[in-house]
Image (cartoon, rainbow over the protein chains, first blue to last red):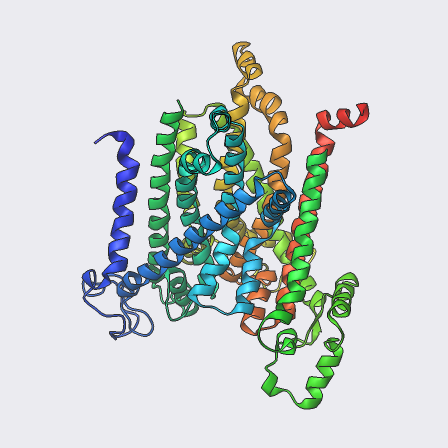
Length: 268
Length: 326
């Protein structure tokens, strides 16, 4: 195993573990979500992370929260990516439409993201789908800027000019040259977007805007905080979801590290 | 020059966007605008009350006129009326704004200084052991959500070690205006500010580091190195002036995100600021108050961007001279 590939394997290992947990949670815990035990138990071999105020097993909650956290994070980062690609492409044109979308992008950079999201989610109510829609409605900005830069850069590249001179159609140029060259941007923006979407989701859920029927890790911390885990010394209830969020974001970061290194090697 | 002018126009556009969003949201969403604008449920109101509110909120008037009334409420500074709390939104926010700004501005200053010092050192010797250590730790720190940083600090320093208080910004019984009040305030601010600094530092540091690393490849830096100038001189006299403008912009931009972070942190440390006011408003569905907070936050953000762009013009001799020669 080459040292260069270490981030790839590490990132994939963590991510695949989380995906497996999300797909078959029952494999990782012997309890179901609603099994009741005496409340506020400490860590033991029966309850890895103890039980909460209602007597649910915290470790089981964590396992079952994986799917929702991953779903919201990944879906909203895919949506942000699509939006960013579309708006980035539109804003790269030199026409009037292009300048409108460029200023729209610049404007979104200046909006206070968190507060605007809080206001919107109070008005729109909290469900997983509103959360996904809202996070992606504000998550496309970075991607759009990068995509625009790349397309503008490509348009003046010699090999694209060459295509035009040789009389290739626009479709051919776009499919075989633009898309190929945008691939690494798409991968790196997806990975970066996944991290930031997961962070945004967990912050909003911590503030109580999460879907109460599909508790994510952020919602778990919110519950733990509100139900007085601090005073009960149930620190694991507060910290375990946080570590899970950290591990998930790190796995995406490792993957992006690998692709970044690979890209650097190609460019050299 | 045009770049900064464009920036300011964009910031003002964002400001207008928020104003329009605030105006439109309660009016286009399904449901009665009165319910949104007062925060009371329709069923709980008598016909008389309903008519009173409809009249007071000018909801019978055509939309453009309603918009003018809304702009007027922003213009005279009342920012609307919270029927739930029976006070103008301005008075509610104004009481709390000071506390939020104390956390935000202190941590923006501290973050910027640390980011600058660490970023210059890292950028000048990119790939060195110091750079690798700081970059790795900031990347790891970057994967921790703000509220988790706060919870960990709170657990360790306030609950476990009991070195710092876990709530409020002042102890009871300390009189305002005295030295002990000031020291007490710093003692209370320490953990919230540290949380926000740790949350904001990684991204700021990485930006300064990349800016500095780019400049370090310039020939004049190489020449300065071969002349045997100290690293300190190279960092602060050769690299810093060249990244000053983007650095100032960076500081201006971080005010907005720090405000957002402060709103989260206040809830953790039970600080009587805009963040706890916002949570309170969200739970009691006090829509005018929520919108007022968004307005004030955006106003501060716009102001800091305009200030930082203006400052860039002042400190950048290239731009000033170009203006004069034109």
